[in-house]
Amino acid sequence: MVRRRHKGTNKSSSARRRVVDLYSGIGGLGLGAARAGFELALSVDKDPILAKTHSVNFPASPHLEGDVSRLTGAELLEAANLKEGELSGVIGGSPCQGFSRIGRRNQADERNQLFIHFFRLVSELRPSFYLIENVQGILDAQNEAVVSRALSLIPEDYVVLEPFELNASDFGAATNRKRIFFFGYIADKCGGLSQVDFENAKWKEKSNVGEALTGLPRKIKKEWYKDDKGWRRLSVRMNGSFGEKFYGHIPEGVGDPETIEKLVEKDLVSGCIFTDHTSEVEKRFSTVVQGKSDLVSRMPRLKKSGLCPTLRAGTGSDKGSYMALRPIHFSEPRVITPREAARLQGFPDWFRFHKTKWHAFRGIGNSVSPFVAEAIFKVIFAKLKPVEMKEVTNGNREKTGTYNP
Image 1 (cartoon, rainbow, N blue to C red):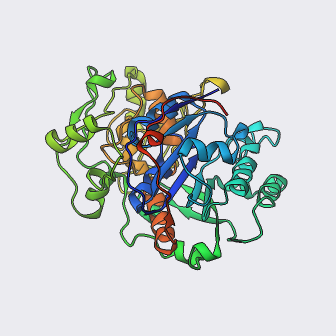
Image 2 (cartoon, rainbow, N blue to C red):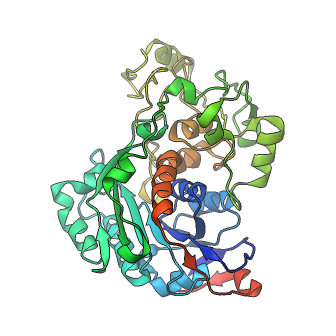
Image 3 (cartoon, one colour):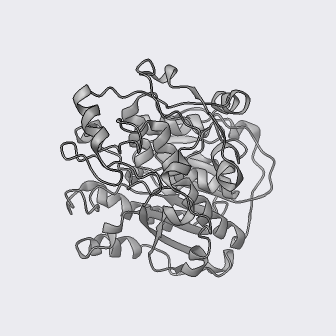
């Protein structure tokens, strides 16, 4: 059984560019798509915590909480209230744990098969384009069979680009996060695209840790140990393109209204939550040089003028609930807060995260940087032909309740 949430409103029939987001997590990829002009027709994730966070930030989109491997293309179209031929794109970031070079690199990890199921659904849905992201290790020799099997499912009329690597730091994010992207499109539905087009979308401006954390409190007080105490006022706002990405550019139907209102009217942001360290740990953290790691915890200390190492997600309860290492603040003897992690990853200040540090960091670490996603989807949007939507009644748009595939 898959629970369906839908808080959306009806829009009139028109030429539109709509995407389905598989393995959506909290929505880093979906946010980039929305900022580029796409409409999120449906998101799918089996993790109830991540799915709930997604629904808070995308209140106008329908959400399916379920296993992608058990869904069919026809079921996804029904859940998205779309007909055949109306879907512009299928996007997603399938689980990477079995492919990661810093993990167990387990070829038998059942989650590896979810990469294949993405392409199975592409073959069934036949969108104008597809885009899927994963870690660099997916291209290692030991994963060749999985990748080959997945790509063999792509219909013959798709133009298939070679997998390409992009680093979030080249798109304005203050993190060294390299990821592999697989992209293809139907030639008569999209203008010619190549890897060069995505390379040319890189920002001329570069960011760093100090700039990304501008305005956030450095001294995190012990009283701020719960989510409701973690709302803090910005001391200053950034100007220019970075400021716009963090404070504005809110697509229609995206964002939690309360969180947006607090930011716009009071300069308040959430997630500035205290982590309790012993005096011994604080003393040890204070001696770690920027850019080096603590010898005991192995936590890296951020370099103010540098980039954040790739933020890791940790695991959910089904895999033992292991917390990933969190970086130490560049000037304070503490690990970073969820809001600081969000800034480094490229999430705007109006994006709302789970109330616990554990799930907030897990959601952020699992996400594609919205900065990267937006740049990619702007390239695609400019070349993509819009899809003519058939008239749909308001009653159909407002379906709620239980969805049984």
